Image (cartoon, rainbow, N blue to C red; front, side, top):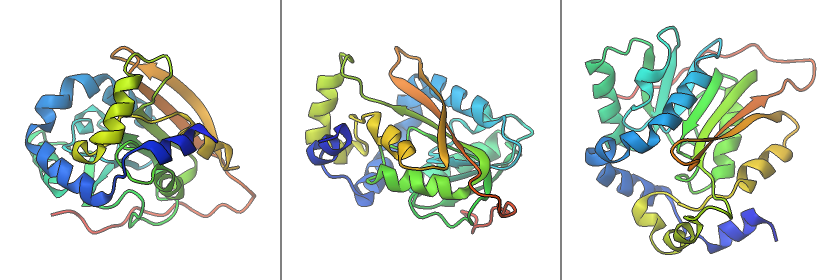
Length: 240
């Protein structure tokens, strides 16, 4: 039995209703609670994503904490499942005059309303542990990124030598729906997904501050075959 199978069987079930309810509760205090601990990861993600030559999709944009970290020349779209979080992101865009942010949209990360190959880079900060089906989300990120583009992930990845591993397991089994995310997340979920796809290649994996709690992963979508469609322009109804 694989580590990913163990994970899926042992963790408390999580669905989009749990996530939306949890993040409606988190929204008023999210920035105060998570700005400092997540900042190094957000900076690393924005720096890697800003190298893309084309539009960037920020999946799980939340309150928009990383939006000011993207380079001014970029063209950034953001999506999130939580309307209360998106409203705060929209306020941040207006307050800080973030002209590189093109639009914010309410979408499920496993079923986005963008055409295939719309983005030069798709980034997802701290999202894989939130979605009920992380593999389905990875499939969707792969669908909307262009051949030659990258998927950039930052996430907590469980390690057997991590002193918090026992706590992660307990939280997963008892309070994951109330938290709105799964604290326990094995690398095999990402690694097995990459191995099963001929069009995906891991180009970077490194631990981030604080204390190596989080992992940056860069995954390149390889052009497969000779016939590659022209990139599509990102289109969707803008979040109001």
